[in-house]
Image 1: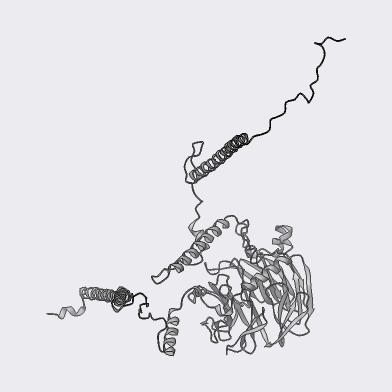
Image 2: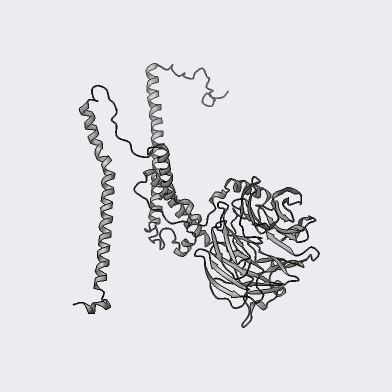
Length: 595
């Protein structure tokens, strides 16, 4: 048997002591302990949150100190505190308008709105100036070797020197059967439209050389023009105006527009402006298909036409040497300018709306400043220019017979020789610079020629306005936005900046007419009539007392007006006195006869 010391004793559950039942006074003590524990936990969590807040506040203060140019932790200070300054000339490039003068009569709400719009305009101006530094592309020009003239460099030499993509943009289309041709590019510069005199019409994606459609209308074609996108174009045929889609399907035949010779499309107004052999200038709203205006110019046959991209004014050239400016809002010409001694052959306006170039039968090429309507330069061309076109960068192309010449800086410096020259296979009938590309499209009797002109196109495009690489979905969205933001034809004027101003003379005239019609002035301030009060507060004495309190407010405007009148009279008197004193000091030849 094992000894009792070595035996292992197993404890049974019977011997375990049970917990005594909980009493009500013990429960209250335990709850107090638990609450103390919870409070301690909460206090610890609150302390942690406060520490985080203080850390964030310290970081924020450090960042503010860094912005203010104060020292960092390392002890160094920011050498260039604050935002980077923007050069003033670059700011001036993106300036939209001058600041408005706030008059006394404006309410505080109107003043607040004006100040906010000015702040937003200034901020957008600064952002545009900053982003302008980041534009990747830069415009370049053709530069020859020492004592080499750039106009002697041929197109084949340029195509051999440039890269493969640029060299593919120089090509010729032999279409001698249906020529000569009119030319037009889309706003994005991606698609080309050709219209032959003998009825041939073709749409081409000229960069990929893909033919979109090709038709023959079986009658003479005077002009072709793309509409708001590459899905539709207008063709001025022998009798009427036709609208086709990009597949060559006829959409509309507009018989109100007959004998059309030239066309221009206003992209922001969705207006197609046409001139005819009968002397009519007509406007068609392509968004709704209605005629907006029909103006009889009373100047005979119209075959010279261009538009001002800045204010959408139409420029027409006439056989008597005058150029007239037209708007759909007036039946008479806005401006008449005598530009040439003979008939006007072609007109072109730059994209800023500052300069106009004209060529006439007197073999002269003239440059005008449209702001002052004065001539700046005049050049003599041996054969005269039949077609003119201006690029986005200010290059001027002029066609004389079968030779195309390109000039540079026509309005800034006197030009003695062309920048580039090229001979085509027939007489030139149409010229057009391709947007955002260094390409000039030439339509002539032998077909079409795409010339390389370095420095002609704008290198940086606005993707929201004209994106050459947009997809079908992007084009559809752009079309919807453009239709919603369409400018009404009533807003077309010579000076677009006048739209934000108030025509005070017209307002006063309307107010006088209204006063005469009604028999009283509706805007006049009425006499103060005290409100009737109860409980004996509308007695005769209290009413008179309230009237006296308001009486000085009615007199304030009268007093201010009389003071202003007195000041103006005093100012005029002083000026008169100064002039008389200055005249009295001057000696006259008759003073010798004075005794």
